[in-house]
Image 1 (cartoon, rainbow, N blue to C red):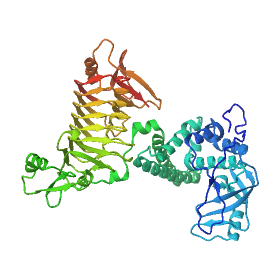
Image 2: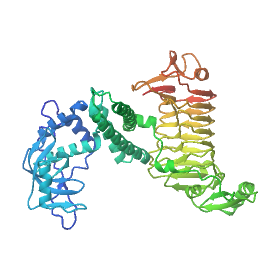
Image 3: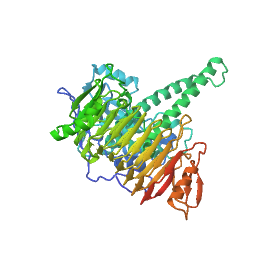
Image 4: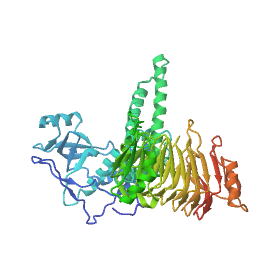
Length: 588
C-alpha cells in the first residue's frame, strides 16, 4: 500500500513482495476445509492507517457505510474467489461470483461436494441450499474469510474484509448513525479512541475491573437501544391516544437512559477522561463484604512472618502481643503471607507484619475495621505486588489503620491504594508507585500522616468529590502531578473537604496541586501560581479564603461552576521544583 494519499484512488496497490501468512485451521480430524489468510493479528498502526487514510477518512457517522462501500469497491476482487462463510454454527466453503458493495454483501454459491464444519448440529447440502435461497444467495462480506492462496492475488481482498469485520465487531455501535450531532469527524471522535482502547485492553493496560464495566455498559446500552428503537417504531405520529402518550413518556425515559450509557462509554473510551474520572472497581472488589465481629466475641492478633529469630519473638511478645492479648477473649494466629491473614480477619482484629519482603499476587481487600502494622521501620517491612491487575490495596472498612509498612508496585496498571468507602488512617508508610498513587473515592475518608509517596505516573493523591482528605507531614514527589482534586460533582455529591498541613510536595513533573473541572468538553490547562510579588505562604492563605477560586499570575481567576466549592485548608506546606508550578486548573 502506498503512503501517498494525494490522489482519489485510495488503494492503488503495487505488489511489494510482502504477503499475508497462512492461518492453519484446526477443525478436527475429519475437517476438509482449506486454510484462510492470517489477518487477525494486525498491529494498531496498521488498522489506524487503514481506517484513517483509506476506509473512513473524515466522514460523518451517516456517511460511514458509503465510504466503506467505496473503499471495498477499490480493493476487493469482484468475483471468482473462494471463502469460508463463518457463523457461530457452521463454516462452509463458498465461491463468490459477485459483490454488492452498496449493501456490503457477496453473492455466493456452495462449492460441491459440500465442505462444511458444524458446531452442535448437522447440516446437509439441501439445508445449506435452502438457507442460501432464503438469503437470496447473499452473505454479509464480514462473514467471509478468504481462502489462502500463495500467489498474493487475493491478499488485499482478505485484508479489506478483515478491516470491515473488525470495524463492525469492535468499533461500530448501532447508535452511532443516530447521533443528533452528525456534523463531526467520525474517525477522530469515535474510531481512534475505541481502537486505542481495544489495543490497551489487549496489551493489559486497562484494569480488569474497568474492562468488565465497559463490556457490561456496552451490553446494557445495546439492550436499551433495541428497546428504544422498538418503542419508537410503534408510535404513531398523528395519534393522541392515551396509550401513545404513555409510550412517549416511556420512550423519553429510555432515551435518557441511553444517553447516560453513551456518556459513560465515552468516558471509558477517551484515554484522558478514563484517567481523570476513573471507575468504581470490579465485581470482586464490590463483593468484598464486611464480616463484622466474630460470633464468639473473640478477637484475633494475626502475626505474619515466614520465620523469625528468638530475639524478634521475645521483642514481639513483650512490646505488642502481651499488651494486645491481656484479655481472655483474644487469641494469636500465625501466617506466612499478608493476604491469607487479611482474608481471615474480622472487625477489630490486628495484623502484625514482622520484618521481611512479602510478595503478593492479588489485591489486598480491607472490608473490615482492622489494624495492619509493621513491626519495625517501613524499609524493613516490605510488601511487593508484581503482577498486572487491579489496585494493590483496596480499603472499604469503616475504620482501617495502616502503619510502618512499605508498599512497592511492579508492572502495575492500577493505583497503589484506593479508599473506596469508609475511613483509612495511614501513618509512617512508604508507597513506591508504578501507575497512579493513592485514590480517595466519593464519600471516603483518608488520613495520611508522615508518609512518603513517589513514582506515580499519574497523581500522587487523587481526591474525588464528596471525600474527606487530611494530609499531614507527608512527602509527595517524583510523580506526574502531586495532588489531583476532582471537581466534577454530580448533583448528589458534595465537594471534597481537604486539609493539607506541613507536607513537602516537590520534584513532580506537572503541578504540585491541580484541580480538574468541567468546561463544556473543552480541554486546556491554565497555569496557576502565586500572585506576582507575593510569597508562597501568602498565595496559600488566599487559596484558603477563596475555596472556589484559584490564583492566577495576573490576579484572582474565578473558575466555572461557582455553585460548587472545594473546602481546602492549607498550612505550612512546601512546594519546590514542580515542573508546571504549584497550583493548576484543568478543564475537560
